[in-house]
Image (cartoon, rainbow, N blue to C red; front, side, top):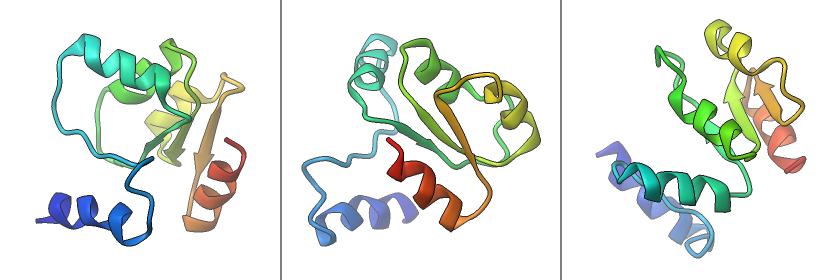
Length: 97
């Protein structure tokens, strides 16, 4: 139900042409989309391997991510990554991209 609600949000904000949610796809398609993205917003706080941010960094796409220790250690050495601790920090980091 959460994903369905999220998929409706871009429409209600008039952002449906620039925002999309994807749950599963071929590796090659995912990498193509990551390369085309303006940035990747990564909010999970309990993901173990941080695959999405690593894939985005691999293709040179900026990442805005939750301030979570494991993820912070993964992205802290890249000038293209922004760690956000709260909603205001996320908005600020997204404004840079």
